[in-house]
Length: 402
Image 1 (spheres, rainbow, N blue to C red):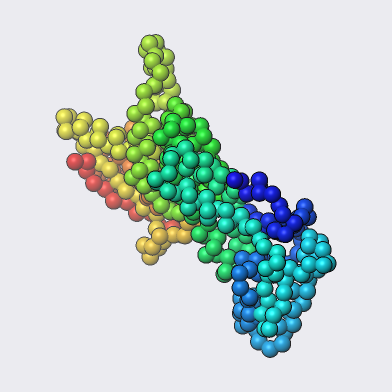
Image 2 (spheres, rainbow, N blue to C red; image 1 turned 120 degrees about the vertical axis):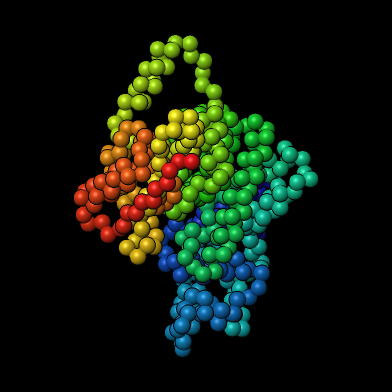
């Protein structure tokens, strides 16, 4: 049964905390969208979450007025609870007291039972996670769970100490549920639904690499190869710029799968040659994904073995003057500048790829060690000329292709 479909009894308060605090009682609704102090919503939410037992006054003061002593925090708590009671009258009326005062503590009135969305979430997750249950039943439960998750736990209070761990728990459970459900959808060949679910989850966590892997697989299974490639490239760029992380082996393997997808049958060789020529006519060095660079390296290594030609690779690293890794904000801006200089200053036959958050890997065919060193020296000098204010250091290492 959906949380929204539960009949609201006049003696049961429906409370949502995923995506924001909402209290509904007998048709009347109170939401934290109303402009009140965060501390007011903080104390009210704390009381509801801990509704099964009285909360000592000292616990409130320690939680919400840390480091303060004497009468001021006590009076501030009493004043705040008075304001909360007045606010709750708009929902429960003046005849019902949702918050009770006990000896040295406060508690939610147990005569007003709360039906919380997170309780339904926990139940749905426990049922959907049972591998022994029928697949279709698990999929239905996951669908309901994902629909129930309207956002992180109390997002307006996300910086509060007591909220952080609870929010992280439900956030992680939600992501795991999405991933498990996406795999079931993939097994059922429901690839469009798989993409929709991944897109929805991505709105809550843009940096989860596993979600992007599932999304790329969903696009590939639909035959949307170009969209899969764009998503792969965007994901790699995002990981570099936000986490300073290289794509995982699983994500890189997907690139190979994208490249291996057969193209539509084309019988006109002129059209194929035209497409290849337009690609080849791009000026400057060839910039590509690391997965493509790896294949190009293997091809050049084979060619060099047959012909005896000299081919070198280089690793260009951006670092702080002391050799440390720069902060991401400065690093991202500099890496974009370095890429522009590399593409503009290297030859059209040279190949460049991003290797890590702070490194580019280069391949220079038909160049001996001295020529390669000279090219890199000129390129690094060109960077410093164009970006005189940069305090970061560029270093290069060179090796012959084996």
